[in-house]
Image (cartoon, rainbow, N blue to C red; front, side):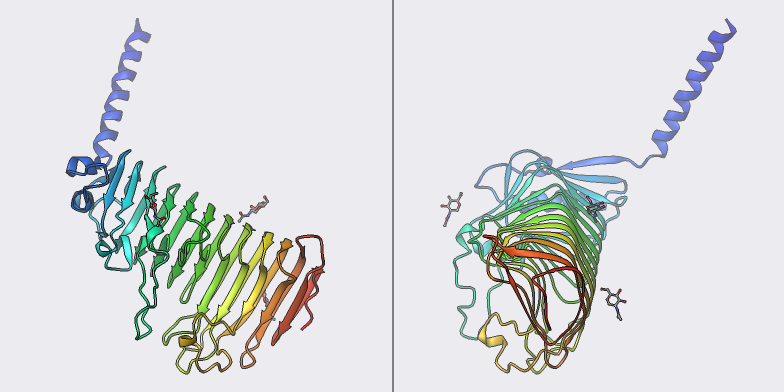
Length: 404
Ligand SMILES: *[C@@H]1O[C@H](CO)[C@@H](O)[C@H](O)[C@H]1NC(C)=O
Ligand SMILES: *[C@@H]1O[C@H](CO)[C@@H](O)[C@H](O)[C@H]1NC(C)=O
Ligand SMILES: *[C@@H]1O[C@H](CO)[C@@H](O)[C@H](O)[C@H]1NC(C)=O
């Protein structure tokens, strides 16, 4: 009998403490875009419903999740701004598809879905962001006689955000870049599917600028332009277990175009595979144009990378030119590249030159290490390496040997 009462007492105590825990936990609330008037289908523009749902979630003092349920929701350009009052991180659960319209006039800026000024953000789910870019890729982007080129909107843009996780979503056929990260700190991009045809132009998979501590991992990126583009002002970027291709490969730069560019310091690319891409690993800088800041690109490690039928597996090009307008002077680049290691890079090259180093005669590449390189032609033919203006160290296997 005594045991019985002790059990009852124990149960009551347990209930009381569970209750207390519920009271202490922050209130969780779901903000379903459908409850704010979002309607699936091609016709409606759901931007108002989406931004209202975001606004209430962001102002909610508790744990907030914006839900985009299963269904296809069409959306014009939308801005989701912080700072938020909700308990960080605010979450966006993407279960359905968010679709852009084919009408370019609805996208006047450089972004479609812009998240900005948010500290603590999680975007997750099995859903898709469909940029419907297929009718924009063929437009002449530099038709303007002033040489100004139209920048088509990137599908997902993170601007001035900190502590962000983007996980498992799919990005399909953007008009411009798939994902752009700019002026952010501590961003994790995981298990993403980034898809567009090889023929799509300017559809960078992930474009990173002026950010610190950005990681991309366990992702598949098949697109028409750079798989991952790391441009000026980035520090501590790490890429691992990413499969790229088709596309233009993993690229640092272009650097050396503008005034006020900042150094690029600390990039690691580990355990990645490049399949049928134009380039494997590329570092590119413009020739000096009379105004570019003399920045440094330093501390890069490229390790355990498989090249599968890649046109230019390893390439440093300090004489890069994407258009005549940018490279009129063609003086040697003033960007200093140093402390670069290529370690265990193996596989096949589609062209004979597998390694090409074209460094600047004004600022030769310093301390470039090749450790265990095994690259051959697709048909087993030997590949070749070329090198100018670089100070190179070699360890382990060297195929092809780099003679500077
Ligand atoms: C783009 O894709 C849509 C939907 O798949 C299709 O209806 C349209 O014809 C395509 N446009 C072009 C130019 O390929
Ligand atoms: C790379 O792969 C190796 C072997 O599978 C593993 O031990 C290592 O942790 C991986 N590193 C990263 C950063 O993915
Ligand atoms: C050369 O670069 C490596 C990193 O790739 C670095 O660990 C090493 O200290 C550098 N050596 C010199 C002499 O700067």
